[in-house]
Image (cartoon, chains in turn red, orange):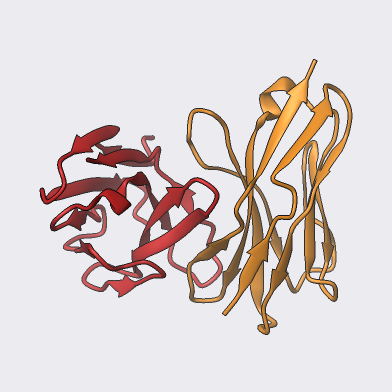
Length: 113
Length: 113
């Protein structure tokens, strides 16, 4: 059972480049989330999706976009990366109920130079 | 809006001893859920324990237990018989029904032999 996989594990990116972080889950969870983790700030929600075909904005959505074409995949795209987007990015999923526990992927460390 | 506060950036405990990590939260909602996640150096976010706000009984998972004081909006984590493998960053989080997790900034736990 893989759970949630994220790719790449880490990436160094030049500012201005486009980048897509991939997230796939095999638990048939309805809801998926993207968080960024910055030192001293904990985890902050970027975007979420309650079910395939729908997405919503979280606390820090600017500069990021997401899509949810199917249940399993929830890619996060940086259209034109900036240094302030240097962070560790976590994808998470939950079964979809209002109180369901979220389970996290292993994270992607992104450095924007 | 809701906030989650972890007032202890760092804590230290000797192996086999007990340590308590503090967390307070602020919400006007009556229906919510509280979590403790562990993040070891591997970066993986691991669920430690979960508490439903409507339950008076404190949650327990093996050596991990919580002291949930709803009126005080306090949700502390007690780790008994601490082990070297417990060394990690611990995050407290609050989930309002239908919303995403709101995390505290974390407490770094050091376990000394």
